[in-house]
Length: 214
Ligand SMILES: [Fe+2]
Image (cartoon, rainbow, N blue to C red):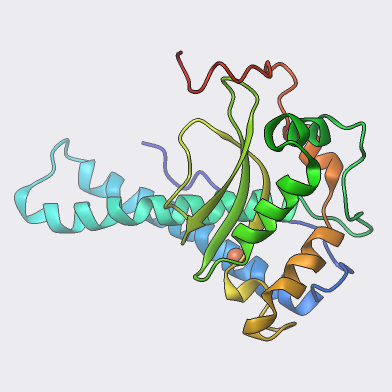
């Protein structure tokens, strides 16, 4: 069994614009909690499976551990994408000659429309994430609202830009109603090179293909 596999990564993000070091420090601790939660659940499930069967009296606990697994795994992984796509000294918008910029034009008609959609999703009520994914089948970008950490992720799609809009991401710096200001700050810190590295260049931009396997 795979247990105790994951180790919290360290991100050097001190000095971001509009997102304080205090917020980041608290956020790193939350992230570490998801890493620990993922390892703990894997261990508990492994313990139940150690004798090769799931006994009837183990079924309630086994079921609960498995129901929580998607929350913990996505809480861990999405935070890594999020921290990774920011940097000190980021710039507001991507270079016009970048693959990402071109992909927004191909998928949305313009970068501005892509951004309006991504920001609009980020302002939606509730806690969750705004994520721009790339469909590996045709290279198309699409933006999605993810509730909590695990509801709404598209299987097989690649996260390209990930923005945390849980209140813990900005509540030390902004009032709850000022989420748009946090989103503005997030954009000013984006590491577009990291984003560019996630765009899969081999993806054909062919919108006749609408899903994997077609
Ligand atoms: Fe978070």
